[in-house]
Length: 199
Image (cartoon, rainbow, N blue to C red; front, side):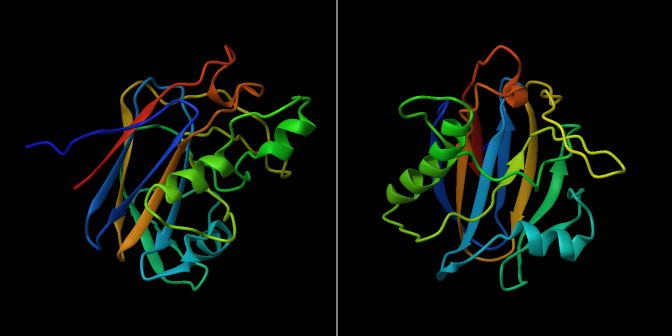
């Protein structure tokens, strides 16, 4: 029996609990959607998945199947066990927030991954004081040998997915990124839903 797919609404977020050993499958349903991901130690929310510590651990800018993300206490938290996306999932870019959209010329409020994280956690009665860097699943950020970065368009096909194994009891949060100004979700400015399951 297949696990139930949970919808991450377009421009919104969802959070869930997972036990050590369970698998979190994140599906890029329409093939054009970046999903920002965070994970927190369920017993100590000040311990979270750390992009900078993870890059130090696996000594690469992006994880490959078999690589394990670690926390800000250098402990294993999520391992990438399957990936059909053909994408180097970004570990460099900060999650979007209201200040980022202001710099991009947006007047007034714009949905953003930072707020999606906090509202998704609030639905589980979880409150955190900080906004850690996110693992940006399906986000195409090409880099050059001299260190230059670019905003790439999506390359993940519809229905592609990643599977991550929980290495501790954790809380995972996922945001269907609302970025509609830069081309990371495609040049049309269209943002879409995504899905996940925990088994």
